[in-house]
Length: 173
Image (cartoon, rainbow, N blue to C red; front, side, top):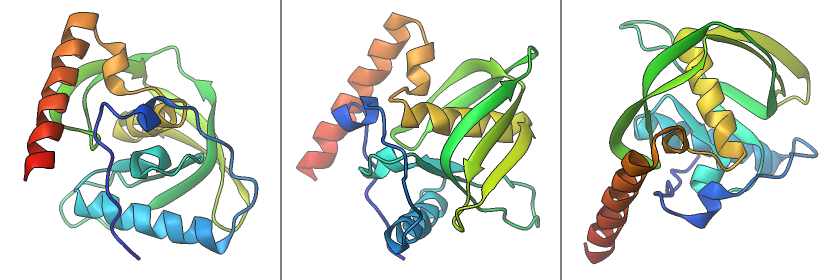
């Protein structure tokens, strides 16, 4: 396992739609392991392949945040929302590709997602609460969409300028 560099917005790769994973290979398993390690190290609760410059439909997540709770690392290959509730929730979202920036985003409160696991088996699960927000946020990444795309233009531009400044500072150091 290896830590991967997380792309920071604005980066054109974060705005691209990813290609489906055709076959679960050792490279895909290694990528999933690296992504989990990178996500936990960040620390975060979700990470999509494009955030580590891999343009494939793969996400990892673990929303178990209770003190003393067992971790629940999940790897979702080619995830797709197959059902969403009419009820909506608002969460203060953040993103590892947009560090230290948060904003309220409204999404369906519950979603059912289908995906392929690391053994190539199709899985389905219904998510709610933080898990529902996280899985939708990460699937958005696979379609080139960021949480700031849900914001009003002025707020989105302000965050983008902050990220440009951060990238310049990082390049200097």
